[in-house]
Amino acid sequence: MLITGGAQQALDLVGRVLIEPGDTVAVEEPGYPPARLLFRSLGARVAGVPVDAEGIDVRAIPGSARIVYVTPSHQFPLGTPMSLARRAALLAWAERRRAVVIEDDYDSEFRFGERPLEPLQSLDRAGRVVYVGSFSKILLPMLRLGFLVAPASLGPALRAARRLSDWHGEVPTQAALARFIDEGLLARHIRRATREYAARHALVAEALAADDRLLPVPSTAGLHLCARLAPDVSVRPAPELAVERLEAYCGDAPAQAGLVLGYGAITKDAIPDGLRLLRSRMSAAPEPANPLP
Image (cartoon, rainbow, N blue to C red; front, side):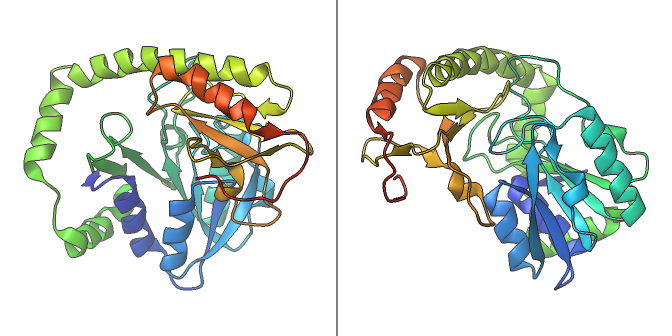
């Protein structure tokens, strides 16, 4: 295990150790843009692989891929978990191809429904999975603390890459967080925060389900909800409306039309007004695709 400066540094360390210029890295489509950009910066050819209701389509992963980056607990941005059957298929594929799976456990701590499936790494019997996590979403975005758990064979190379990168992180911050965890305060915080986020999630999900112009993607975890736009529906930009378009998470054409609605930084009382504003800016007539602020 290595402590890192957030999940992004963990991905960077894994990429520096494993990626050679020209290697193919498979990512989810739609997926997490910073990971895609990072792998490209290291010289990789990034291939988007479609995601369906069960997770990444293993059959569509290029045979040339040496690394597959996935968010199985809570697919980002769609929010759906990867099914057990799809997890097994991905691990079998990685073992056959002698490839590495990077498992980014994105937003999995805040769950509002069914019991989460086991992480890919706990199902891995061949040592093909690198597990990446972060404390930024659990606690504070400004808290740049993450971690990775890798097979023993990668340990020496990853530790050397970390020393070359920045030697080590902030020891006082790590010590404070370790004590916070040991005293049970982190678990208590997660339980309290989960109750609050569940209430916000329910408000947004109910509003999306009541509007036939939006097709919500089922999700029971995390800090956002995703909804696809019905045909010929568009959203007019407004300075006070801060939502993201699903197109921003698509690296390959054609982009998918939809909205990503975050509720992590808005109070429960403010959500109804925000949703009313969103509905007022939706139109059944197609308009030019201007990015929302």
